[in-house]
Length: 194
Image 1: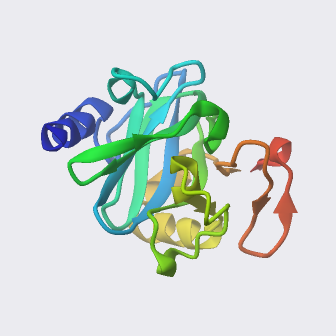
Image 2: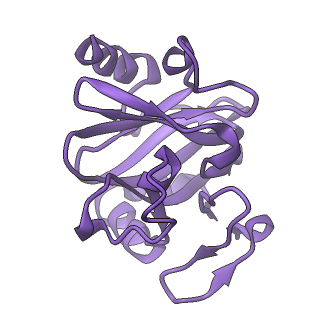
């Protein structure tokens, strides 16, 4: 069943990397992220606030997906606030309640870099958020790899940087601060920059 969900999730969410011919609607932005996953993790689903990822229908209510395939993801999405609410693992998955989830905002007409999403209970991922509590939210960590993301975009998708302004819109954990690649800590409300 989850195999069908994985196929339908990717199809419903759209193309993983947008093409040079793609046009953005006035209410759309571009999500930019990389996803590193351990074990059987296949993808994470993104939800809008107020849309529960929990319960029997939670896994079907998502707005977008970012897969565990290597490389940068550039996905056209509606400008809105989102949270990482589902982790697809093997033939099942885990819901992350909105109150515990990483969240971010997509601005219209911009490349919105949300960070490197690291998923899975695996020592090489260096998960630092409550490593012993074992909740689904604790299986996710977002790190700032903005320099790498900009370099990859410049090398593989230069047309994106020419057409759209790049903003750092790092996903942050509920009631947490985010540490950037340079070691600085940003409070949750200061997560974007020009």
